[in-house]
Amino acid sequence: MGLDLRLDVKMSQSLVMSPRMQQAIKILQLNHMEMVTAINEAVLENPTLEAVSNDNPDGLGPAKALEAGERVDTGAPDAPAPESNIDWEKYIEQMGDRRHLPNVSGGSANEDLPPIEANLTYGESLADHLLWQLHMLHLLDGERMAAEAIIHNLDHRGYLLVTLAEIAESTKQALEDVEVARELVLGLDPVGCGACDLTECLLFQAKVHFPEDDNFEKIIKNHLGNLERRNYGAIARDLKLEHEDVIEYHRMIQELDPLPGRNFSVDEPRYIAPDLFLEKHMDEWTIVLNEEGVPDLKISPYYTKILRGASKTDKQYLIDKLRGAEFLIKSINKRRKTIRRVMESILKFQSDFFDLGPGHLRPLVLQDVATDVGVHMSTVSRVTTNKYVHTPHGLFELKYFFSAGVKQQIGEDVAAEAVKMKIKTMVAGENTKKPLSDQQIADALKKDGMRVARRTVAKYREALGILPSSQRKQMF
Image (cartoon, rainbow, N blue to C red; front, side, top):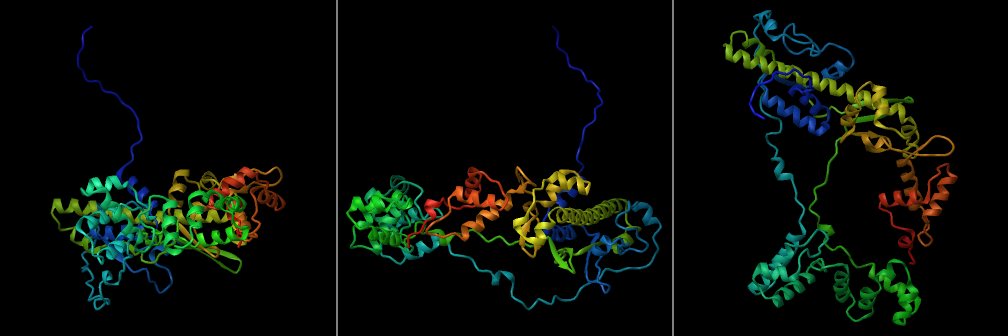
């Protein structure tokens, strides 16, 4: 059988996403703060784009005027509306010779203010806090090196992530010196950092705070499980103590910190700017897009003027930039319309939630809103991801309003988030000395018209981070 090489011509159809389409999708899924950054970067990169103030004497900026169906001026003479397809070469030929010079702004009103870096503060990490104390001590070089290695190998809880043998090997120090160094780290503030596990952490703290009572060591070493289950009788029998004394020991152990490093977390706070505001006026809900910091864009008439006398190379460059600016303006305006339409659909489906509160959230899936708005389900997913709405009930991600339903034998299905909210409310108001069991919560939900199995209650309780009833019980 002979082998040969040849060329075959074949026609086929396939879907290819153009760069413009990729840009439109990227703009659609940006949240408010990301949108502000993207617009500012686009203005810097594209000279034909011009940011204009969205202040308007009539109360409508260009973005809001576009939503209201009005024609928006691009800033160029006789320029088409942004929603039309512009033939820039033909448009340039028809332009007049009126002169237009770009506006040159004066000095900034904030020139005298200090830079923003001067107003920033940074939280102190656990390692920084411990190292500062360590450097105040008079130590041998080997002990200091081992102690620094221990501090740099602590997790966010304050626990040691590696063994002492590994510290000794990496620092080329004797194991005895490493053990001494760890004792020093354990005694620094907060006490207990450098422990290998919970038991060791609590033991060291108990020795510091209650040095004269060895019952703490016995309870922590042998009966942490009984403390967790509130099995005070077993502890009392083993240590020959009164029941009330065991309860008092438990109360004192709870004053110890099982996670001494948690107050020094270096995680930065996450700031959220809502994309939408939902307000109620005269029994009517009003949807307001957050336009704070988002400049409206127009095509700079200055560059459309100079384009007429430009060279062929410069003309082609400017035409590409003008087309890119036009498409960006259209994409931003389409994003505004799509977000508003999706929020209007959510408002229609979840009207009980907005009128009565989170406990009245209904089951809703992306396909319901996609069908109602007339877009693909992936578009709804992009619109609702990482975007937030400010409501009278609080700040919610748009994804929050999409929840699976819990089947009911009678009546409509109930949203899973509504059941979770009900469970959270019940636990918050329970008697801490007689906490509700999962079965009792399920029975209470049944009386409220929510038929939920006990195992479902347990699953939702764990998702909410709520402990079982045996661990929520308090004796003092």
